[in-house]
Length: 137
Image 1 (cartoon, rainbow, N blue to C red):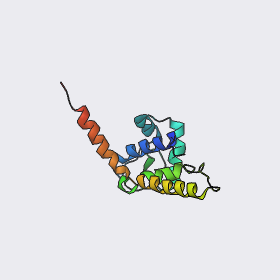
Image 2: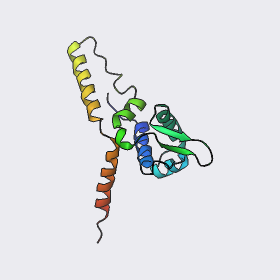
Image 3: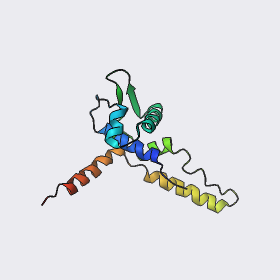
Image 4: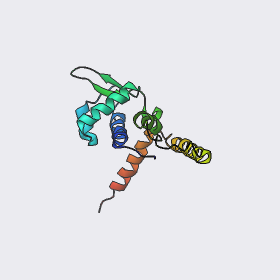
């Protein structure tokens, strides 16, 4: 059924880190891994897949790293889920019961609609956290 793997959760955290730097800056895998608390080897695989699908750009060399290929406003949770969770609905097979198949197909479309949230909204959540943490005695 529907589930979000660690891979997708880490991808969102990495994209958030990359969204916090200017369009011209790059972050090294080591920096992203440290800032987002992601195992570096696992992060390398994730970033390569996101690059292959056009969400990231990599720059080679001593001053190289990764940056967003487009703004977080133009990247949705659905984009990331569809790239990294290719089998999110694969275990739903009710071909012997057309009404259940229709139900699951409808549910899939509704779930994907919920995932249309742009990742730029992460900044709103960061703002809420900052407001909560700014109270002092």
